[in-house]
Every structure is written in C-alpha cells, then in structure tokens.
Length: 118
Image (cartoon, rainbow, N blue to C red; front, top):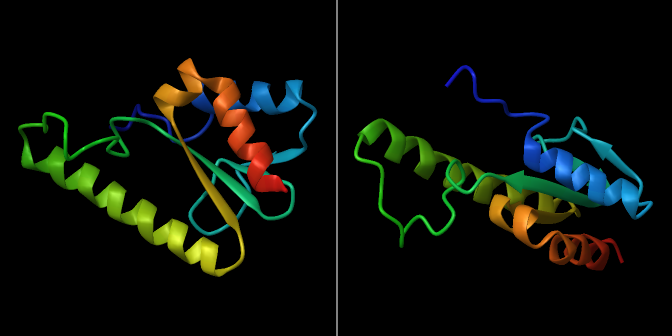
C-alpha cells in the first residue's frame, strides 16, 4: 500500500492535460477539506477516482476475498459520500470522475466540468 500514490496519478495527469489544452484555469491539489484533485474556477471541485479504490459498481462486481480490502473499499465509498455532501453544503460543485471514463471518454469528462463551471 505504501507504493500506491494518492497524488499525481496517471488519471490526474490526463485531466490536467485536458484542462490545459482547453485553456481552463485550475489549481491542482488545493488545500480544501476532502483533498480534491482540482479546483476549477472558484467553486467547482474535481475528484479523479480510481475504479478499484473508490468502488465503482462495487455492489455488482466480484468482491475481494480478504476482509481488509472489503473494509478499505467500503470505507472509501462512505468517506467519498461524506466529503461530497459536506462540500456541497459549503457551496461547492463536486464532480467525481471515474478512472475508466477519464481513460475512454475524456471529452464527456471535460463537458461535465464545463457544465458545472457555469
């Protein structure tokens, strides 16, 4: 686990390139509750979530066998919900982009960000 990076991941790099190529101003890793990956504009926060670590379709997929991993992923899912809820109450727009969408459908991700910025 110590070798798994939480910052400057491949999917973050892809989103950064996408934002820069479309001349969208952003701050990477702003000092805001929940540690979002990007602050776009003044009130739009973008999280780049890995499919495995953040439990994409966790209820439908085959679960890890070890209790540690089940607890870890479920804890991440609960924390993500709690963080998003708190940030929305504080007036932020919260966008969570999944790893597979960033890799396979980057323009859809870009359109979501642009739509939330307005």
